[in-house]
Image 1: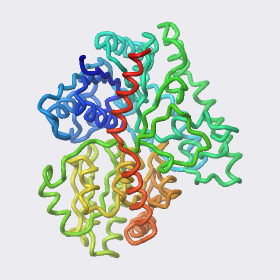
Image 2: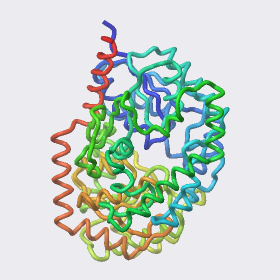
Image 3: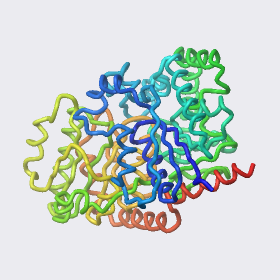
Image 4: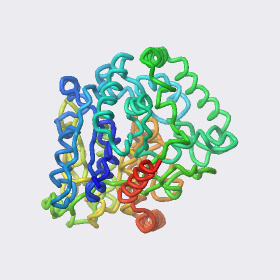
Length: 499
């Protein structure tokens, strides 16, 4: 009997595709045949590289498949079947967005009503940066791959809208995989309008639980967001293009949940807002993390440095670089932390923008320079650092992967949200008692005093440290992450064979 053949359709951004690579690795260990289809448009990628990847640190998704097969992420058995990459000749979402939005700082916003009203009109450009013709071309490319591979099961990453449409056109049953929270998927199916009055509207930064006096404005903001999407000329044009191309149903990103699709998620009830109803087709796996070798094997020099003192990791993700003022204020917050607690040190992954390294940062950090290491990129996966035994706190931008990695490692978190759903992860760490929102005015600006106090709090507060440690222990004992995701995919593939 041939090994199961699994096809992943995914975005090419790190934040979205990491769950795909993590699960693909676990499937390779189970001697499956794995195919990964994603966007590859070198001519566009080269034009926007200075915007989305100054310094050219990120690997292409094709290179990441090669690294997976080479055992760069984790050891593979000698008889493992190499994963096969299929190029979709179309730019990915972030690449296409960068063509029209050269300054991605325009997508950065703070919390509050006025910021929501300013940002909602930008949502259509983020959700659907392609022209109707480009979008349909991408769908057709995915269709060709789906037909050619003829997999036992197709697994579509949640933001890969063209992949969803391709499966719908071909009548292919699919499984969804995403790095998202439970709320992102099932908010719309909560009873009694809970999504309106029980959950802060996206991008608002409203506290959770939502206080009664904010419920009316929360509802109004939710309605405003829907109206912006419904009446968007860009999305209307996309809808017309989809209709002309005979693509069935609604634009996939407007359908966060379907009862007919199994959803594989890293989120669990213990790591999310409290939701009244979780449908049975939600597969909560726990953090679906990239495999990794021990840090001392990958970056021995960095490991030796970490061993000197307990370390705070500052890592704002692969996309967010921060403005000059933001980074200077963050450097000041780090100086405040180290001046107060000289027995620790800070590792800051600072990715310079196209203008290069800001010389003012060295001046700001000079009084504590012996306790700060600034690097432009991490060769090791962040989870390798977090599980090294030397990281005592993690400061990040509120990305889902950073949130779940820190939870898995039992590390307290400081979150500096910068756009849309990242504010919800700041709310989650405070709701769960495992961290602090680093600066309520962060994103467009950063209060260095408040951020410095937040860093001190997560290092010194025994309550926060205990809750983070206990949650990590619980999640590791109850959920199996990528192993669970792989096993459930194989179960679904076998169930499909019997149909």
